[in-house]
Length: 579
Image (tube, rainbow, N blue to C red; front, side, top):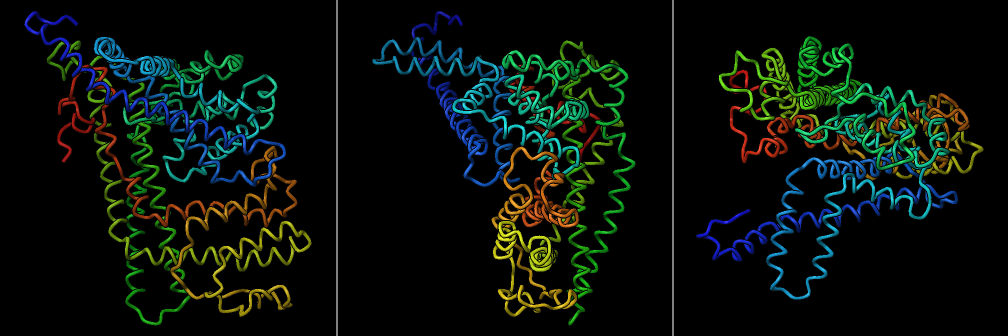
């Protein structure tokens, strides 16, 4: 940049001030660089810990799975963000130029220059974070075992809809392509992977969701990501069927119509309206029953339990509705961002199309009037249901805790008691795990039937006499107890065998009868939802947060403007007021 003659006398001061401003940003980038290296090392260590043949640690459990997947997701999003933000290399270029000017007066700048070179390599290398993670993972020993287990977990969770809330589903969709690339480090391991997970299952998942939200106005495409990563991971370049998946801009016209029907909220509004009206009525009815129960003295225990159980089921359904609806908005936005309109409608335009910003082409002009109305209507439904549930927090919390307490005690005191006396009576190792589950979470104080729980195996009562009765106690288990119960169920069912075919509960060689296995599976997935129910307020906040509609960080850069004007706010503003 050439300075005018009048400013050349202060050129050194200008360079120094520019350097000081940019140095703050570069220090943050250095922190990110250090953090990603540390996080990659931690994730690789966890994977290696669970991949050793002589594994002395138990697991992995679903808690371990989610811990590793969420950390991998953060690393992936950071890498995608680094690749997408054009301002980062531009700012670094300016920073390096000013450093050259101001450092002439400094001593011992060799270390600083080395750091600059290292940072430049990090910023200029696409997918540098994933490449570093790959190097860390395979530094000492292979980790294909745990990678395959994680892929099976992702595939089963997506196929069977086990991801309870939309952020979890989006996490699985984002990390699955990366896991597949990392797991095909050799031809041998590729064959091993496809024996456990047929390639058609992967293709179907990638085809069903060709666009995945990454950031509010930045998306990921599994097909595009696989194609780009194949040039960085040479062993993956032979996976022809995965690499021929069409990217969003390559989708054929006939398939494009199917995706439009799937992604556009307008096409689902009939079902959404019916769901909203039906749920509102049933939630109000459940609340009225709760109020009646609160005002009545000496209510029958069975009646009270039924009302509170119904309230719990209704809250779960409300969370599922909010998750599905908010997830639809995220996915529609990602679809729109992946397919900007080429030209704004001429009837709405009084300017030359060249003056329109990129942001307008993906938001303002990319929605029809009907699509804007449908979006606004769905936002109203999400906010009204969320507010209705939020207002009754204190009234329903006791019922939720009591129902969760009852579910846990019924399982650990009754169902496990039956299993200990039948299925696992002669299996000491497995019966020990069941006993640990009871010791961990059984609330004997709430039990009116068993005065001495240590003697429960010595009695020879009939099945009817064995049935426990519990005092209603609004004492929910802690998050630690829930994670430990899931861990013990995993150990019970899998025996710690990473390569066990059929998934966690689909393995017929576990030696556990189908009926008992089904009970364990049902309780296992109930435990997952307990965590969201117990964090009632935070869950509602997550499911009703629509602030991402106003987020436009990356289009500020591409449009080369400091701030997007009000007329380019979310699509609902383009069709009129959003009050």
